[in-house]
Image (tube, rainbow, N blue to C red):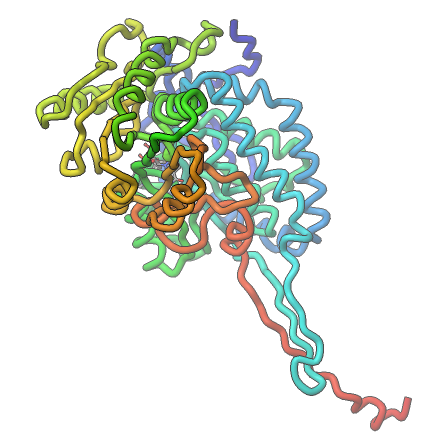
Length: 497
Ligand code: NAD
């Protein structure tokens, strides 16, 4: 069924030193098609020397690019937007190939990244400052936003297009130059996004792409010529990058892990709620930082909610999205992930939670598959309540009322997403007001904000204040200058004009 026309390179190329090349590396990491376990390419695990070359190139490009008028930068972004639209299906298939998500999910991944490019096309307006004439006698005040210099992005495997695109289009639109290090597990989409940006007319050195892991990330965090770092990944690495980067004088924004709650009140609209729960818990095989993994059914309606969820789980079609069009859920990213998730299932069985559906059963023989899994009788003292699983495992709890649900939710260390399903405005208002969490849904299964809004995690889900996307993204990638000008009419006295 796949019509993928892109040639997949044997070794993933990097874009640094202003040209595409395969970096010399001692180690290579396999890039898999997770649906078949086939190795489709190899990522060179680059070194700090690659970073050195990329920084030099980005640094050299910064002078011209930062002085290029915002409207001219926007011209290139408009062209990029148009080329991305033409290549939308090709890119979606590539995402599906290297990540394993279904084609519809891959299109969603692309769509959300694409929307950031659309947002960035408005850079001339978005980066305007403020002004006040006559702020004091003969003094006018204006603010200006200026780019920072060389910025870098480090992205995770689960959104091969969207997460990198939270970063580089906006940073570049603001007049910065950029070095991107995608996840070594899914580097091919980023390479294609880079090729298309160059085709749109982006000057050499403005975007650079390097590949690797810890050595590259450490070099970014400590390099004196790097001004800012955007990171998205697991919380312990987010915290590490944040501490190391800021202690070396950089601006850092770092998104981490999550544990998201779906709270269903007895008056929730049943069919729409069930569809939203299924999409949230099992979409992208549960590998979303906004995946709903704790399902709280309030009161007696919890039992019928469980029955509905189990019926829908039993109907989910697992498979290879590029071979079977009917596929509703793909595999997880790799063997280690599969093993980690199946171990969690085994260990949770011993904690007193009841395993209602076991995703280790009835899965395709080949591919890193874990089927949809459901635990009930989960309580807040169990590790499955508080730890991110990042797989298709849903835990059910049964709070007495909305207050107990909010109390449990507010005990979590993370603060990405939480949703209430209800037809009562008062309950919705209480929930949105009382919870300690940055992205809140009312009857929305995955309350992930579009590019106009910040991706607004709290607590251990995000380190620092300025989030990705929206005007916060613009603020992160620029610094402000305030100019106070005093011009009195001395010239009249001097020259008599
Ligand atoms: P990860 O933390 O393993 O990897 C993220 C990036 O860090 C990759 O580029 C990787 O190469 C690099 N890295 C890995 N080990 C490193 C180390 N020891 N030192 C420095 N860098 C290192 O994350 P992942 O498994 O690719 O992605 C899944 C995680 O990302 C989940 O926890 C998920 O919740 C999170 N995530 C968060 C958001 C958000 O907005 N908060 C969005 C998407 C994903």
